[in-house]
Amino acid sequence: MTTLPEALAGLPLPGVIQEIDYEARLALFVEKLVALFADVGITYDVGGLEADPAKILLEAATYADVLLRQRINEAVRANLLAFAYGSDLDHLAAFYEVVRLFQESDERLRERVILAIQGRSTGGTEPRYKYVAMTSDVRVADAAVYTVGRDPTIQVAIFSTEPNGVASAGLLTAVDAALQDPAVRMVNDRIVVAGAVKHAVNVVANVWLLPSAAPSVATGLEAIVRSEWDKVDTLGFDLARSWLTAKLMQPGVQRVEIVAPAADISVPFNEAASLGTVTINNMGRGF
Image (cartoon, rainbow, N blue to C red; front, side, top):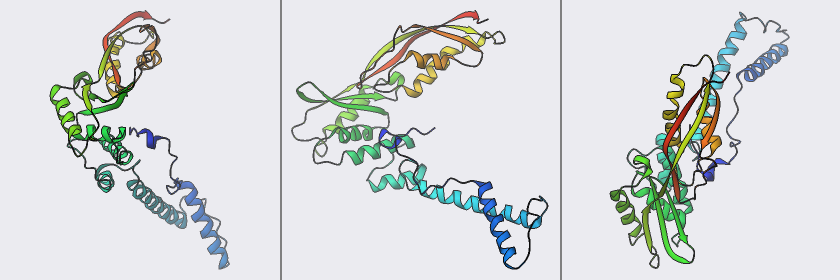
């Protein structure tokens, strides 16, 4: 599933993209055919028969019409940043002088295009520095650009695609070099690059299974939780108890009780949470 950047996520579906209804299009064709027959004094009244040759031809024509309209929709989407993918997205990005990095996903490239647009300023804006950080290396999963209090030092926290999101020394060096480039850094700016702070959170949950569920359902829950967390783990993403409950309510699970954490874990925008130990207690059958 495609995840849109915040700048695009709230946009309504463009009006130029049509909703395609095969049955509605077929009804229009039949209505037109009946009118044409009526113009020459012929009453067409067998359109409801599946074997009617005219009806069969209209169904074939409607199918071709629907395919054409779908192709037009796809062509429109290919020219919109929110919907383009693959080489179409590459061409849109090139207009903003953004080039896809090696093995970069569509979602990440789309985010960098937005940052490039937002960061086009004579000053060192947050989007500009974030764009440079993410462009420096495809291993940068996310970056937070901020200052602390009145200290003008620009802090850049890097969240990595590397294990547990921890940025390696080599990655931090690459990002720092990109940001310190005289063509990038404003003369008066002092930039410090560091790995995002990671807070390990231990999880304990009690689960009750349905009578028909195999015991292996409970033993596989830890792997599911870790896999799902890897998909959403990024800077500022809170670890909510409701999220844990939702992921643990797998087929065969009757009830879930989160023991730890005792409350939702609120994560600052420049930090990230990680799963420490995940303990799943099989409490038996729910009834």
